[in-house]
Image (cartoon, rainbow, N blue to C red; front, side):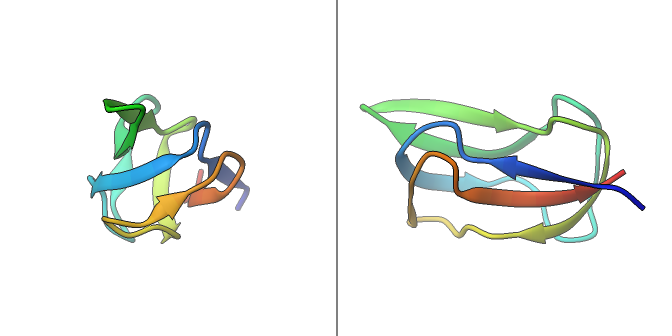
Length: 73
């Protein structure tokens, strides 16, 4: 099945991860919240499907372009 790699769009700190491996998500569902420049930014699923991998944890510093999650659709 095809996979979508969701990348971090902004540099910041992961506050919360809202999904688990195996979760079914719809396009636009919140995957995690990243704090950047004192603002909370929701990172959304780009496709609907099943979460196969989550590559970040709360408290982790992330950079733009880093893979956040893999969704199989």
